[in-house]
Every structure is written in structure tokens, then in C-alpha cells.
Length: 280
Image (cartoon, rainbow, N blue to C red):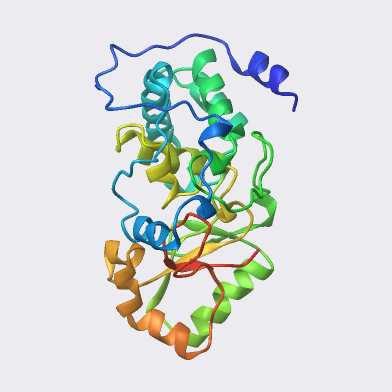
């Protein structure tokens, strides 16, 4: 869909929150002059940053001051949509569907024109500005998951695409047994928007910090087939390096499985993710 037409069709009312509550430490306009390049810093410094991915660093890029209010308002609106449709349905929701849901339910409220412009800006900003250097499998803001090709994985609340993604998960499940679980499956652009922007919001607008552990919207391979696995009863440790101590991870490596999207020491600006299964 044409971007101008998208905004024209999407906007029906203006919704605003109260005064923005934060005092921002710093903000850097994300233009191409700020692009991160691994060759511009030593490998030692880069690896240090990846090991300390969840703390601010001097070169980090922040949300522009004039966009801080819209960051907060869209995060809160996404939370309301999740409450309305449920986590499983939200994972498959396209932006058009999210806009329609917001319009239909007074408790959610319509996205404002400025909120949609903010989302568009985030989506079409080149991720290397933040330091995220992987490819972008979803190129259009209105790209959607083909729900007819999905299969819901029992007891997980997650979906996978039929074919190679589902077959890969089944192979892992058959090889390892009941101890392996699906912790994250397909993610729509809207789901990735929420995960990424919520991380930005809870870290004072730090876009670079968020991108070290969550792909910016459009850049997540969860949108085309990748998925995450974990150890049953391992909880939040399934998304930390402690996962490498789990029986599931050890069995994966014993089986010679090496299809991880972001291995240790990768130079894509992403932390080590030993749980992220590369499918696409």
C-alpha cells in the first residue's frame, strides 16, 4: 500500500495522553552520519558491548525529544490491544488490523496521525543507525502473516508456519523430547513493534540498547519462520546465556545442531542468542 494512502485511510481521530512524564538524559537524531560500523571500533570494544548489551553505551542512539510522547502513547495503545485480543492473536496481527481494532474499541482508542507517522519513521529508519546490521526480511509496513499457512503449537500460545519451520520444530521435539518447549514463534510486524518499542520505552528511549536484544520491526526473522526454544521449567533463563547450561541446549549441541541465528561473537550487533533457531 502507498504510504500516503496508508496514513490517509488509517487516521480517523486524534488521541492524546497527558504530559509526557520523562526527563530524557540525551537524544541523538538518527541520521546516516551516526551509523554504527564495526570497523569503526575495535573488535574488543564491540564484543564488550555485546556482552554488556543491556546497559547504555556512549555511542547509543535515542528517540528524538519530539517523538518521546508518541513512543509512550503507541506502547500504551499496543498494550490495550493485547488485552483486547489476547497474546496469541496479537502475535499474528497486521498493522491494518491493529488500526481497525483500535478504531472499533473505545477502550483502546484510535491511533493518531502523529502516532502513525512515528511508527512509519521507526519502520523505515535503516537499522544500522542503531547498530543492528542484519538483513530486513519484511520490507513493507503493511506486510502481514499468512494465517492460512500457520499452525498453533499446543500449550505454547505460539504459532509456526507450516512446512519447513513446523517440520524443524518437530524434528527438535522428536530428538530431545518433552523437555524442549516453543517459547516464541511467528511474530507479526505489530508484535515486533511492541516488543522493540516497549524495550525502548523502559530504557529511556534508547534505540540502540533495544536493538542489541530485539530486532527493530521488519528486521525480525520471526516474521518469516524463525522460532525460539527453551527448557521446560527454566522460566526467564531461557532468554539468557544461562540457557547454555540447560539440558535442551546441551542435547542440541550433542546432536550437532548449529542452526542458530545469532551465535556467540556474531558481528551483526546482536547479543548471543543460543535459543533462536534459524529456519529462513
